[in-house]
Image (cartoon, rainbow, N blue to C red; front, side, top):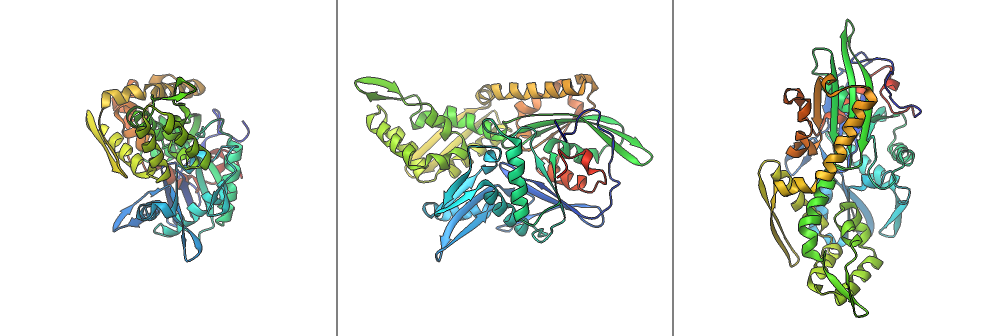
Length: 446
């Protein structure tokens, strides 16, 4: 593919660029991170201060609301605050990166105005760079943005996604823009801690995608050099694991598996409603009139009308965020315990369920197998065996899941490393932005 980093690409000198300043932007499905390289060559991650707490990540969420006749936008934890304060008067979006490469998504109407994908992304990034400390809103220098190897969604089109990214960043004042695969950026960041030659496999687990990169690093008199050997990816990660919990624990309590009467016949409630319900980014679409009307009709004819009415309540009352927050907290708890309690109470909906790690790992086994296949493909593209890998760097929030880490045990526990799981990509992107021969690391020159 034209412009992609492939095996056999010429070696790249790391750490020898001119220190002119560059921004690395990790625009994520769940969280986004920005890092900048200053004039002294050091990397600084933007901090987001909310309710007295400083965090290096900004939740990839947006709230649209009206005040005094004006339509306003808020992002990150401030968007969550606005939504929780008045969910009925607020349009809340999350995981919208999932639509980046979708040809079927053209725009969505918010307060009577059509918002294209690039408009949503531009509004989010502009406010994110403004709210971060130090503020990067007025910086229009070189920006290096990460992209997954494989975008999430059905039949994703990378060309559409990159065009949207460029349009959004142009609206924010950035014209010197470069794309780098997210796992390649993580590998570049990890390489800063190397002291000897090494072939490194980086596994980057985000909210919507899991990406893998193999890079060979070597040391010479001028520093260390890196040769990207392979990169693969699959369009699933943390959000998919949340989907499994919702599908197995919550959806059956909201009508999944029940039946309804149609012309003296008992039929199953169509499964596609629950497939969409279990995917966070689909909830806003489900709130559209036709879907709600269809669900009300099914509820009237259902053998379990109360369950379907609760499903409708979740959708109509915008309870998706607190529900998915409860699910995410349960998943996190399962990383440390053999069993976790899923608890959700709102608007007359009361859910209490114990989730066992063993069951959770069974549910995600098909996803883990797809991850295995992507890693095997990366080794095949690099023409390497498991024994040829010297170090394995696991990054991204989903790398905390024990079952995910266990898939890499065959490389040798002593080779597995983690650290800075949430900021490594942004920092690596910023460092790559310093390189004179940046084209050897980018997906394509822009």
